[in-house]
Image (cartoon, rainbow, N blue to C red; front, side, top):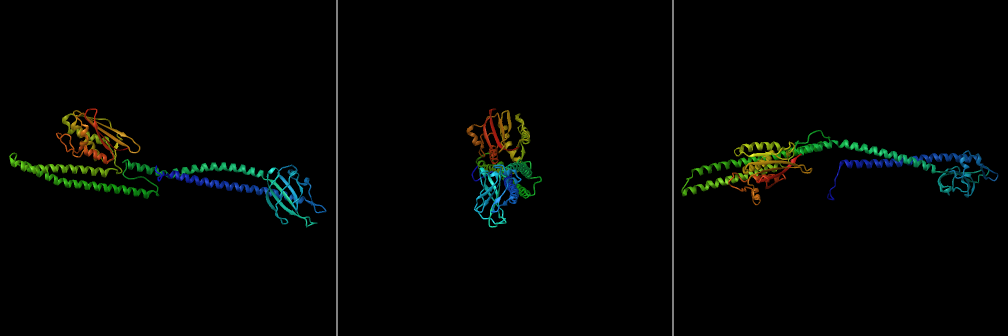
Length: 471
């Protein structure tokens, strides 16, 4: 395939776009839902720390010098007493000196934010706790009522590992659920595309019927979006058939118009030939012109028959809806040959021909090609003429091969090209125009086929013609 050409498929394109759109939508939805869930957990976690901070502030007392005092046992949560439990409190002076801290911190300490806090303001920030764990730290400033100039910073911190673990679990479950949803949506998209494109398969079958000759136009219900295209295609087919039929009628009319004066000339020449003296010097002079006219009229008739056959085949080749059963044509031709050559007692052997073997062209052209080959074989055969038809079912271009052979003298290889030439006659003793094999060869070529001549196993000539077929 050349770089400039690409194989396109509506099905693949729609499925790819659907899959991409759904995947992106679910990915964004997963990110948003995961973020919202994490924010909700953090807000809930922060709310719990605020309650712990309020409880801490309520339990703080100040001595006579304004220094804070706090009894750990007065706090209800047992995690304050357990080292590295994940819940910590600490009281710092205004110059960030640790004054008191929870037992859970053991020998570690919390780092407060470097900025200044206004009274009662809540400051929330992240931090690093014992053993390098991530913390969420809440701070507030308190002042003793007796010594309002003193400022103390109370810090409460909680380990966010539990939040992170919960978010990880929920994210895994969410991704699994979204993955299952993605598969289901892709299956639904595939079903939608399959159902949506189903009428196109029917349209494809209708086109196949037209191409194989079962129909002359596309028939059957089609989607309204495709109906204008079908109507236009049917109009082109009808117009094409009309133009071809008109051209063939004109060719036939022209041939008839030419043949009529040719017949008149031939009759006049034959009458003059009969009136001419049969002997003497005058007889030769009087017969020259009639003989010349008769010869030229015969030549003109052969030319008219030749070009008429070419015009008919050229017009019919490639026209949609052309389908001719080979078995029926052969049966009629064999019946005719039996009558024409009845006096010679020839044995016409025809191998069985399948009823599904059909020629993709005009019935008259097939009759002319096979009729010429059969007539030629019967003229030269001594006793036997054999016919065989084979279907060559090539998916791209199916064809049929008809073999007609006889037990006559045959044609020497060096004279076969001459036999296929227009008007070429190998033996003048046998009546004929010399156009039979030439017309067959020319018609076969116009249909994209070929005619081959070789020696028959019976001893005579074997003519093998290949033509387009309908399956």
